Length: 189
Image (tube, rainbow, N blue to C red; front, side):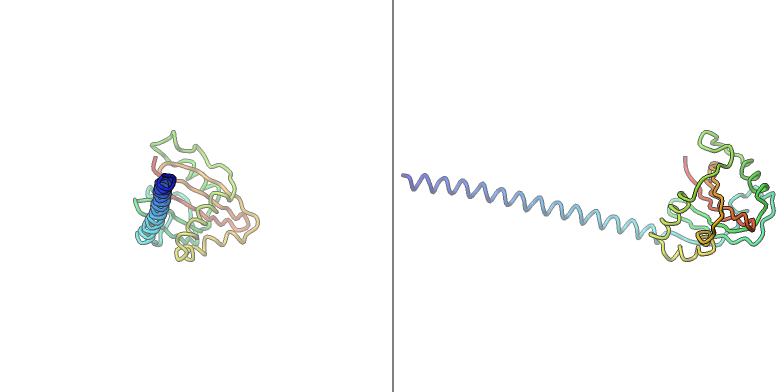
């Protein structure tokens, strides 16, 4: 009778252990499948984002189609069109600081509640985040921004920003030669 009881106990214990191993194995497979799905999804989205991104030459007057009321010299510009109508523009040009600032401060907006009234001094943090994003996700596009990223090698710079819906502007001003490195992106409310 003892042997039957031990055999019965052993069978119940073995079944319990088998269920535990089965449950652990199923959970590991689910976790692996979930992780794999996440990685595949992220790679797919990144690929779609990369394949639908275009880069073209542009002038500042094409962004601000109301017409520029100040003089621009030696202009270079690149527009990066992303999925969903979002874009970023990178310009380098020479201009009079006061004329440019007046133009940006006077821009009209129909969303005053999310727009700035005037240019504000800032630092390099935001523009470096924007550039590093492009560098990490789109290295081939980043290489085409060498005219813009050269500001990294200049010592005495002033940084400004202004959001006038639908555009956000960052200006990097090299006061030694009145050169501006001007970043513009559109944004949605």
